[in-house]
Image 1 (tube, rainbow, N blue to C red):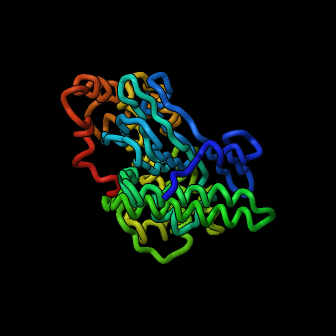
Image 2: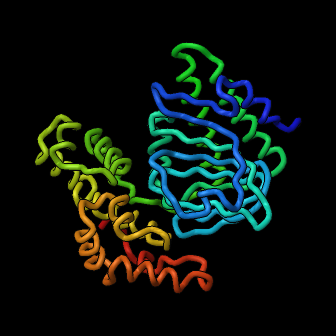
Length: 308
């Protein structure tokens, strides 16, 4: 199979080396070079989904406390709940294709699937399998050439198919959350909203208004279906997210508290210490000491169930 010429494909776009769609959903695709000065070397986070496909180069991908080697043929898919860093080998650069998109850019079924798993979906493809992935990406780029409502639908379906390809090949089975097996659409929609927005200020009144039922009725339905409350789930999600951020030694406790969605740093420190027995700063210092001698630094979370 002839190797895809990505520079030529990207130059076909209205904006050089960039495919971009703002409405009815957000999607941006570009080609880039990542060197040892790129900001992605530091653990960071995004408010959107992300796919990166490595065309050349080698290095390490760190995500959610896990490190995995990257080279030509590697690809990974991240959700807004994931924290990661992209680290090229010394003296080398990553040449990659980068996709970022919001939850509306993929189908509901794919969104549900992506939020079920604990780790990022990461694959390493060779030969015909890698060319197949690049062909799917090419088809996605060609969808931008379609006019009218067919364009957005074509892009959404092709992007969803690309996500499914990565999910299928990654064989990721470890679940991020328990399977609630709820058929109640109100609970399902509320759960989805919390998972995507837990870092924002969320009240029961807001959740009730979105579900078009009273907050008390929603709280009862949610507890019956999941075994936990909306407020407890939000708090647990924020704590888990803060744990990941604390692995970056360059982030202050104030920044971590704000990014994880806590209303005040003092409150964050209090609930963190109550849950884990140490302050956030003490945990961050433990991470610093363990760096270089351990592949991960998440012992505190090993025996902690996110939703209890």
